[in-house]
Structures are given as structure tokens and as C-alpha cells.
Image 1 (cartoon, rainbow, N blue to C red):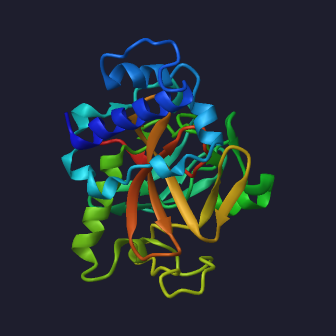
Image 2: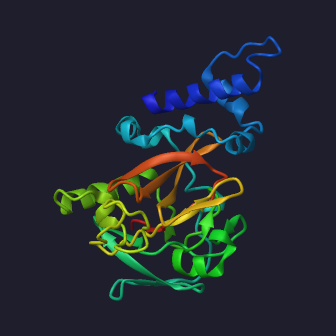
Length: 267
């Protein structure tokens, strides 16, 4: 068992004990996995609304000890799988033409990514502040597992994002990965870390997000869902911020609405 998986079970166990009044029925639980299953019985929404951000575990210190075999992938789930909508990819033009819009694409580290945020309307998705103009510029925000990539594309796993970071790090010398991937405009903080250079056309925009009921972060954060699941309440996401030059992978509640980039499947 990796350190990260063990810590996730410990966190779930602690939360369930706190919610249940620390063993109010006098029963015992044999292991942390049992408690994490108990947490799945309906506590996710209450945990998210309680603002329990202090329990988030940063992947930056734990990701090296994780392996794909120990992470539940949602790429095979119907909710995040490709659907049959006709999109046409042009390697020559670096575009993906779909009914909703034509997306720019970019190849980095041998993988083809959307260079714009997904903007395909599905239930449990929204425009920031419910404004169609924000969808046009920043794409839609999605709860976990609801985004639908075109056929032949998928919502990346955390290791796809990590491979992207690693590829950029090899190419960009001493520059931070976040600086290399963020756009040079729209990041609103005055700190020098805010703006990026967009050296490879990946164009990370500060689209913000939505929590349980409130939109926030436009101009200062860009968060992207992965397909990697941690238990019933959490999933990993890739993150960029105006407050620092770097990039990262963290985890948060599945009910939150974040941006999505699709990546082309390997042939």
C-alpha cells in the first residue's frame, strides 16, 4: 500500500468518526477501508459544504510513491467516456472540429492535447457566473465524471498531466512549468508570478471554478479534472495559480465544478 492511499483511508476514517460522534453506537470498525466505505454512504456533500479543505493531501509530495494499479480509473465509466459525436481532427491545422466549436490542439511530449478548455454542454456543467460569454472564452465547468470528450479522446489521468509537466520541464530550461504553460494575459494578480509565457501554445487560462454553490477564482486559478479517483468523495485535478509559477496535482471533492482538457488516445 502506498503512503498516499494509506493517508486517504486514515483521512476518511477520521472524518467518519468525527461525523458519527466517535463511535456513537459502540461498534468497532476493523480497518480504515471499511470506514472509507462508510463515508461513501452519503457524507460527500456534507463534507464538501463544511469547507473541509484542511484535509486535502497535496500530490506534490506523494505522487512519486503512487502507481496506476493502486488508483481507480474512471476512464472506463460511462459518465466520462467518449460519446458518438462527430469531431474531425486535423494534424496539419492543429484543430479538432466539433459541433459545438473548433478547438485548437497542440502536441507536447508526443501527446496531442486540446489547447482550449472543453465547451460541450452536459448536465452538471455550467458557465462561470452562469454567463455564456465566460463559456465562450474559458469553456464550461464540470463536476467530476460528467465531461464528455470526443470519440478517440479522453479526460486525462493524473499521470497524463504529470507526463505533460515532465515534458515541459525537459524543454523549458530553468523556467517553471506553470509559467511555460499559462497564458501571458488574464491572470490578474499583480505579483510577477501571475502571468505566464505560453511557450508551447497550451494556453492555460484562469477560468476559476465553482464550489458547492459559489463561483470563485476567475483570474487567479485554473483547475482541470483528471479521471483518477480517490475513494467516493475525491478525485485528482491539475492546478495552476496566479500566486506561483509552478504547476501541481492535488485532489478535491467530485461535486465541485472544474475545467476539462481532453487528450487524444494512443493508437
